[in-house]
Image (cartoon, rainbow, N blue to C red):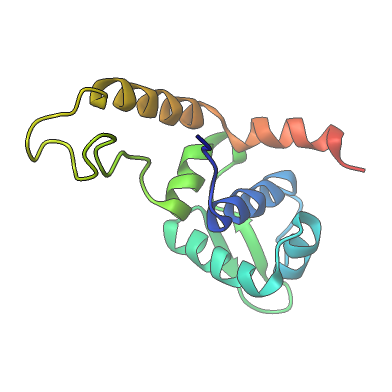
Length: 141
């Protein structure tokens, strides 16, 4: 089993990480984010628009414009960004029956799966972008 983010989630996390690294150093242009985080520029425009709509980042037009976080990186968690990009982390279909659990009772693995899902959401909620940026900086060339 693979638990991975889709492209939208991956690129959203990268974009917010870039903004966290440059927090309080001025607005970032989309081109700077794209180059720094290896995100296709065409796709980044949509990602940034979604992050603005979600309230995680702000956009300012004009020559001095760009993107910046609306809150400090210590107040933005990984779960905020993942759910803004991918939607709520939730089991949509029964693992055993292929339809929503509850329509005819819960399946035998529902409780274990739900608990694992809650544990993952809890861990993502505990991980802030301040922490991620601190870990990322020593890895940069």
